[in-house]
Length: 500
Image (cartoon, rainbow, N blue to C red; front, side, top):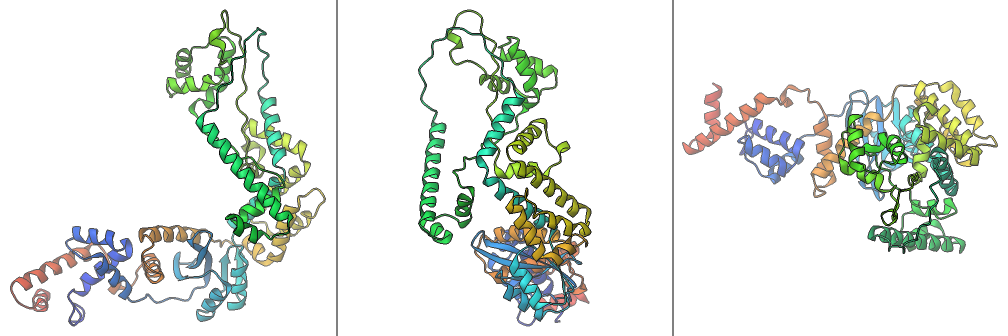
């Protein structure tokens, strides 16, 4: 009888197990809706109660452990996820991100001989304390992220050079044509558009904040106190102080369907063709699948605002496109690319930037070399690369990145020689985020932990295996319970007669 139903239970074991699995997969309300469609009606509270009462799965000995953090509230509070990299499943969740919590968990669960982690110092300290015999492996993805961040910090100090390089590269790539000289009456300047006014207001606010931050810094106030007083993040304050000058926001660049045909449109425009309909028809013959409005918007910027009031032939003037000022993040990605992977415009910008700031040429070459070392797993070249970061032409941000690699040398060398990394842990974190958002922040840590761990395990025990036939069997058992209740007999007797 214990295999069919527990004493004083209102559900059979199979039905309770099926509802528990639904609660683990979908949560309360969504699971309740699915259970109703499967003829197993249950409330959301019932499903969550079954999930909380479910027995915990036994934790095997983990030999290769992956450690990373996940956000309760991004930027404020973080937890820790532990994954078995050999079995590709999470093994535990910790509510805090600290060296002490990780150390206590490793002491309580011995057996790990390899720990893959990110570059965080707290996890490194916790692994050394809790499992001193285990080999630590830094994550290769985080190594490349740290390299890109070092380049970004170096580029932030040369914000003016980035803008000038973009302007020079755009002028050299698009040589302007001298228009036909003609006496033209200058129309009165029109007021700026509402969108432009909003941009100016936002820029003035950011400039005021920047000036206020610099004033507080000159008064000797610490970064943390400035952030608290201004209501800003400490990273933003540090970025302001590191740049040394006000940084203009980089305009967002959109990819348009007419970008591939801009050169042809400019050629036809210089030849005197001003009809957007005719230009759209010509582009359609070349494979353009856009509309006439797209072509009209593309050529609208080339029209003279006062050309409609001038009699006679219109001058054939070539107007260069607006200059795109890339951000430090975009330039860092460009420096990590090979010249073959960049476009002609990007190569022209990089060449001008190297002429203005020769140190970035050295930084780009060293960054590409480190990325190749990480890609090819050539750990024997790491010592020489770190030694070259102390050269005179290397930015001090890249030198600091090399010093960080030297402090964590063993873990970095293991990352460049072994196959293990934190890639699958990042996938488990993505799944944890989905489960956390399904719960709308209403449940506690205990329920989140049970859903992440139990739903992530592939159940191997026969008594816990759940396939489609079990749902069908649970539905039959539910139907027999209803029938027995209507006949005013015990449902357990009906189930026994069914089994016999």
